[in-house]
Structure formats: structure tokens, C-alpha cells
Image (cartoon, rainbow, N blue to C red):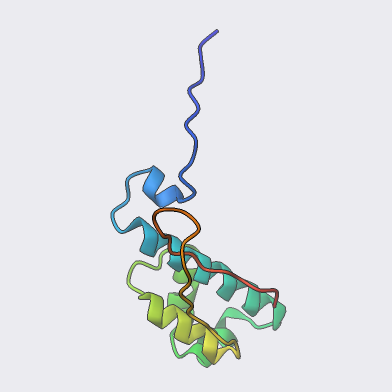
Length: 108
């Protein structure tokens, strides 16, 4: 029987697999998850959501499938505001020696 090696996650899968700009990718992924949740909660089709956001349905489909490399954090936040969401950026003292960047999502 072969041994399985388990490595504890850092909390950021992108950093764990060596992706450059891992923190930015994780923030974008969290924003895209929220975008998807809002679209579903509002009962919007991708076409209707894309129209509200101001992008093509094809581009929205790519973003929702995780292909968001061409979209900045700012553009994703703007998309959420166009769907009636407030986006807040906050800064607070770190609980440990080094800080972290994270997106905190509230229920829709």
C-alpha cells in the first residue's frame, strides 16, 4: 500500500499551487462566487445579468466559469454594484504578525 502525503493548506489554494498574484486571484474568485449567488438570488438569466452589468453574455459566462483573468477586482466590484449590491473595503489591525487580504461575504 502506498503512502499518501497530505500538505496543510495555507488558506489560499492559488498560493498553494504556486500561482503568481495568488491573493488577487483569491479575492477575484470570492467576488465571482458572490456575483453568481446574486444572479441566482435575483432570478436573472445570464443575458439579463450581463445587460445590467454592461458586458456580453459570453463574457459573463466565462467569468462565472472561472475565466476572470482579464477582469480587475475593481471591475468585479462594479459588476456587483450594478446588480444592487453595496461593496465595502475595510482595513483593521491584523490579529497575527502579518496581515491578509480577504473578502467577507454577507448573505444576499
